[in-house]
Image (cartoon, rainbow, N blue to C red; front, side, top):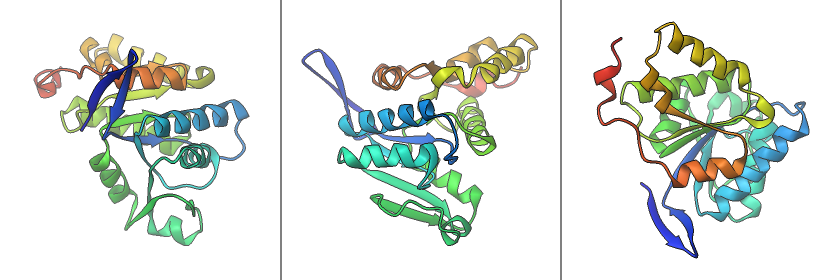
Length: 206
């Protein structure tokens, strides 16, 4: 649920939970970590709760740490085997432990009003494409925002365009996702979200 009000000309968002997918790698360029931390701070400052994969390092850790420093609410969702490996964040507001990866994603989507994908590896890409698929089929209604820090997703975005040009997706399906260059643009897209089409399944068949 999203409640918007205008204060001093700015949109404020309350009662929203954003699911953030992001890399767990601690070896990536610091520009990605800086953007993740900035997004965490902005979400917390706007009273937006975060649900994410529960990791304690990489972009996941940067996001969570920054949000917590601002007094934000951060919920992690982690499979039992990852928890047993010690990969979880130890300071977040709540940690939900699931039986497996599939249940993890279901819980994250169920808790989320919106999805934001930060740069990441195969796991992040898989989560992002599932979010797109669910929205294409009308099974997820919220905004999906790709944070294209340092043009990380350039090739992926070009591939989506390639799918459209080859009629594997409709042109209308471009409305499923938004592409942001900065964390500030992510916040703008969240505040200005106008939804997509009322009946996505009506155009799911090509």
